[in-house]
Length: 445
Image (cartoon, rainbow, N blue to C red; front, top):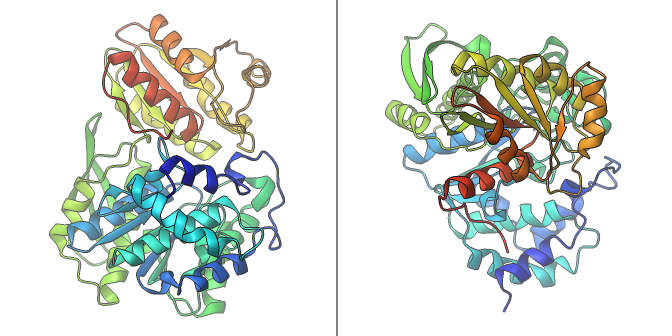
């Protein structure tokens, strides 16, 4: 009988691209045939639930969380599959808002082992994806929201034929794998579009939208573009959350409460609202009060999350230039502070120059750190990039020590912002809970 730790050791024993700094993003290396074969050995669990498939560069996790929360409020048994996790592997697989148990991970992994042995060259993410599908199927999920891991076309989740495919905002990220133009990146994301399956696209740069429109036309997939279908406006934003109004074209205004911060989350919410309309058109009953309650109760930590006050302590998983720009704009709009102390760490493969270009102008002090992941960039390397922009910074690692340093130099009127990736945020959250003496979130052995 496997233990939970045994199961994790087994799963992470395969090729894990989340921890690799360089690899080839090709159809040979990311072969969906492997996933299809393994699912077939399990009697195709992905055919036993209806799904919503979500791709994009930014906002796909938040949008997925909103959709899952809305569908739960509507009374459905809802699965949610996301990556990466913040603190424990179990966060990746949720059913009705609850993370998968250690026992279920162990039991399912033991069931998979003899079947996995029949499919050579599987990767960690492929095994996790199949495990998640089996979990949702055996627990009779009505609807499952599946977030794409990397890209879309070659992603292990792309074996489903969903009720609707959702594409959140596309920007530059993972360019060494997905391409150095928005056209190339959008082509990979649009790979989730299936013949005849409705598509919802968030507002996109013209170059990306052109690709999505062309693929939808080619595959006969009805396309709804969010900012053509809905209008929305901010009503009030505070550190506790925000209120916004939205209406479909030709419809009436409704007011919604959202606990997630940042103006960009309103676009994600509008994408969720548009997707709800498409699902209703497919016969999925989603009452209006479920939409209101689902948005009001969505939980998605690590995204412009307020950890403390006096000083403000804010963590955010921004990891490309576009998300860093949104973070830089959100901080002064939401929080009154005297100085901003930036704690920054990055992973190899993320656009450090673009992020620093957005964050350094709004930072008064800079502390560079290193995340506890094999892809973590050395703070000395980050320092070279900072100095090239005429700034100085301290190098303090690991992330917990960097946060403690920031808190020592911060006054009660300052703001400490920890960002650079979700891995940085995860380390900072654990360090914060230790700092204030509160129970730490569940972590893996």
